[in-house]
Picture (cartoon, rainbow, N blue to C red):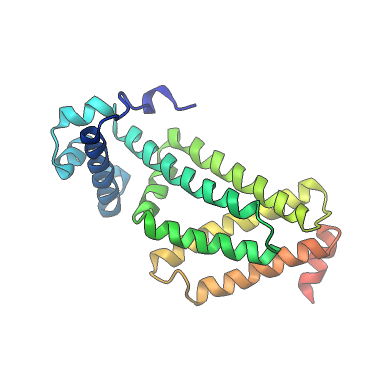
Length: 215
């Protein structure tokens, strides 16, 4: 449920109002990239988007509501595409590679959303979006590993997939920021994660898994 202070005041229904919303969203992303969330304010958004501030307030009560809408659209797009991949019949590593390819495509489609992700970390009210997104990721990853034969106890497997997800997220963002989404840093990390996933399905416990990593 969307917090009351983050809800849009009016949902756009006509083409003209949809265009206004798109201008507001694009201006917000541009300003986030340039100065981050601390420099963002509704006056700057209105000025950049070329609309009157009163028009902005017809739809949004504050800057946080705009960022929330952008964040939700972005994460919904990712989860919708991930669901299709996770439910497919590909092998474990093929599925993991397909997820990586999908994220790169989303990054191109939603250019500038890296700055949005950082803004969501800063605004407490938006943390729930990130928490909800991580919970979805962990659940899908758990099911994927179970599907491919992992028999670990649930608590240990949850700890592993949380590690895999969080390190994947951090390294991917760093690679994108450096302009090398497919550079050596990412390729090395991808190979390491593939090894972890394969080892997880081929061992019976975390203890055996850790021993395998020493070999």
